[in-house]
Length: 285
Image: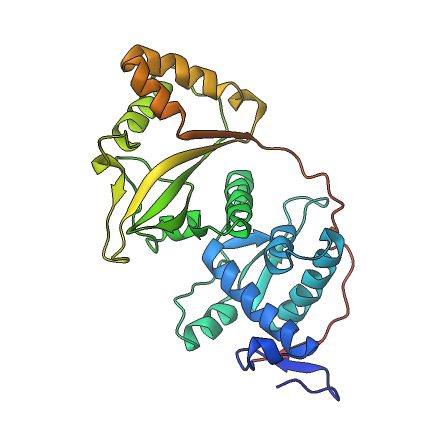
């Protein structure tokens, strides 16, 4: 419970959300931070701000998030590191943080050995954006640690999965982060995977994912390509050209309609780069 005298608030002891005081709401956000970091393996502080405080201005969201980060760091529940001086902090669970989640029934492991890099950060950024649009997601970390319905499908590993329940299936978007130019054999392999995986008007078999984790099957209905580097741009035209060599024009049109291409842009919003310690409340476990 929250104490105004000491400024302390305790993890995992929360009232009904509709009856929360501001301090209890902050405590709830601390719980959310631990849980979302566990799902993603690691997240940038700016990504956490988007997820935890989507309804307020980015700079205000980042300040609120920094207060949580400083409090959880002081308790030893999370780890923080930075690739360069001018990058946001990368946050992962400490062993103590993982033990805390496990004590409340959540499968968790320390992220001390995780080095996400630009590829993982790009995937995480896209998945958070999809979550804010109402999608449920499986993160790249969950996929690689076998906490998702599949680790690979038709010989390929996703960089993330996002879905919405549609009648009796989960209509699923497969995420691909493109960090290099595809050509030659690599492009041909990708196109063959698209042909064998994405559904046509008559056939869904190759796109269906079933597993013991979830009784509701996932059906891959779209592929989202995030073009993370300049060399990857033009992929849409290269895929179109290759598909026309492999399948009839009518099938090419159906497949291309299921592909989404987004060029990654550098963030333009003001970022708080965690340069100075932030005085914060304490959190008790």
